[in-house]
Image 1 (cartoon, helix red, strand yellow):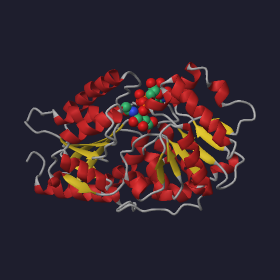
Image 2 (cartoon, helix red, strand yellow):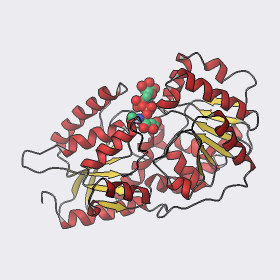
Image 3 (tube, protein in one colour):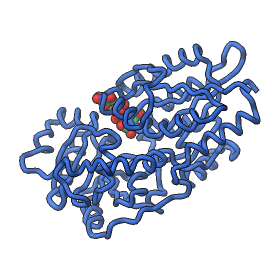
Image 4 (cartoon, helix red, strand yellow):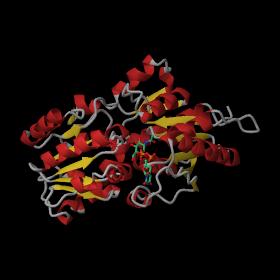
Amino acid sequence: MAAASVFLVAGARPNFVKVAPVYRALEASAAFDVTLVHTGQHYDERLSESFFRDLDLPPPDVHLEVGSGSHAQQTARVLERFEEQLQERQPDLVIVVGDVNSTIACSIAAAKMVYPDGRRPRVAHVEAGLRSFDRTMPEEINRLLTDSISDYLFITEPSAEENLRREGVPDAKVFFVGNVMIDTLLNQVERAAALAAWTDLGLEERQYGVVTLHRPSNVDDAKSLAAILDVLLEAAERLPLVFPVHPRTAHRLREFGLEQQASGQGSRLRLLEPLGYLEFLSLLSRARVVLTDSGGIQEETTILGIPCITLRDNTERPVTITEGTNRLVGTDRTKILAGFEAALAADAGTAARPRLWDGQAAGRIVEALEAAFDQTPVGG
Ligand code: UD1
């Protein structure tokens, strides 16, 4: 039987980390012929190419170069350009990952596509079923919509299974495979730790914290961002903090005139440019504590056994709380500082291993897809 053709889609920084192991597993399978599609949602060297290098990914086969814009603009550009690629190359399967605007745009274009011979591509969503139940979060809308139109839903944790069942998704579409972001972490963590990125910053193992912030709810409002910055400066008095700043956050710090306050003289809060995957993982691996509003970092710290203080009121990844090192503190000053103190007082965390977060998730995804395409061949 001829190999089925697959579009594997990535658009933004966390997507690259997730597609890397899936790309390798597809390449190793005789059943699939893979085309790597980059939408161009993230385009800066430090958010894109450097990740391809660190993750040993080849340059994308197709680049849509959509760039930044409002949600509607960005999503619309991906929709149009991705649809053209579907029409031209007519893949049998489209795989999307995560919850960014590229994820929803490509899944919509694929779910509505009918080729001239009547065939339709199938859609697979990796990291399906996660829900924060907060519809003010753009990612929550992307997750809900992508899941509702996907044929295969690959999930990372038990909450996703419950969420999808409650939304009426048939069990036969849902595959509990583990976590591809953790595949990448387990594959790269020794290489990353060997870089000892903390020494370049004059820091000692377990004697510093790492900060990341980029959620619109935290950084797009001047008052909220200034308040968080104040807490970080106070926490940094207790433990030096390094803060690789996401471009969204960097723009806001400039716009709100907070740059000076953030990187003032003698401050133990060190602002850095965004880091590559290996350098960031290196820093993470020896941190004493992490303060973040990222989704993926809640999972990475769980596996690494590093206390994670999450500056959000909700998480779509509850297993990082029930089994891992994550603590939700919101953005209340007292709660952030209490969480921080508790993390400092705790012994070095114990690494948790939620079910199937074992480095083999991508292999399970490709096995499930091989079986699905074997039972119902292309065009069937
Ligand atoms: C996007 C995702 C978010 C994910 C995050 C990871 C959506 C809705 N959001 O958020 O879920 O957690 O990526 O980083 O898809 N910019 C640059 N260079 C770039 C890309 C962006 O400077 O290469 C700046 C632009 O000013 C842009 C802003 O960052 O307007 C935001 O970029 P965008 O892709 O819209 O959203 P993120 O905040 O990165």
